[in-house]
Image 1 (tube, rainbow, N blue to C red):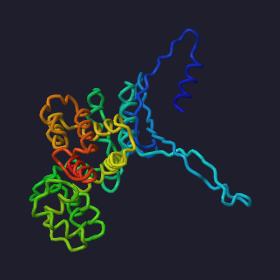
Image 2 (tube, one colour):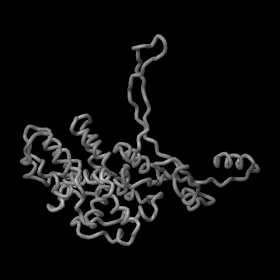
Image 3 (tube, helix red, strand yellow):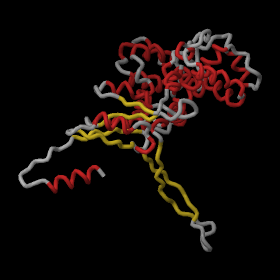
Length: 333
């Protein structure tokens, strides 16, 4: 509508009068404009005589072949092959995240606008590309997160499980909501399961979580409940892209360059020395003797992937499936 107004204004201008051209800033969002919380405030903050902001939903569409029945009186048993267009949420797809990042990085007029809906039981993997976007010098706009959600997102999880994070202590309603989850046994089991997949849990905590997963009553302290809930919610926000990467590796359904790209997104905030140290147990003995040759996270993954799929299991040993499971426990910890 605004474009039409500008066009009309240009047409009505007197001959020889120059109209001032507005520069357009694209707020590239994961949600359509009518579902973005506080959109008007963002637009007003950018709009001036020379600048105009627009909300542009990012759409990631993939094509998939399927067979559909012809139906009808004479179509029994007959089918035809069709191509379906499927729109994928970029928060749950690593290729969607890569395209979202690529579009913003290549166009100086684009700014990322993340609309947060939920922080549990829903994918929210966009923060995986935050560091790459910030390297471009452009801001990241986030909306849809009320104070309670903000406190949960910024809470520092106590990995000793002995104290309740300060941000949670200061928000009584949030703390009470987290503690009440143990009363809903089935829902709390769904929170506990992804936590059990992680490495580095305190030995005293593991039997308690295993008992809950088996259907027994919780014997966790308040601090343990709060931190397990925070960690479980964190895991579920990133679980879909991690599962996507895991299945692609297990099934060998993608080429190595595609897997490398996925690994780089998942480990975007991991320094190279930490990546080498974390995954050196999957390297062959030859690579382990010369770790200085690994100059990037792409090289780290390439060597680990080669060892995971070779007959020589590196220092980890075990079958390919066992080595893959161990690799992903390390990746998510």
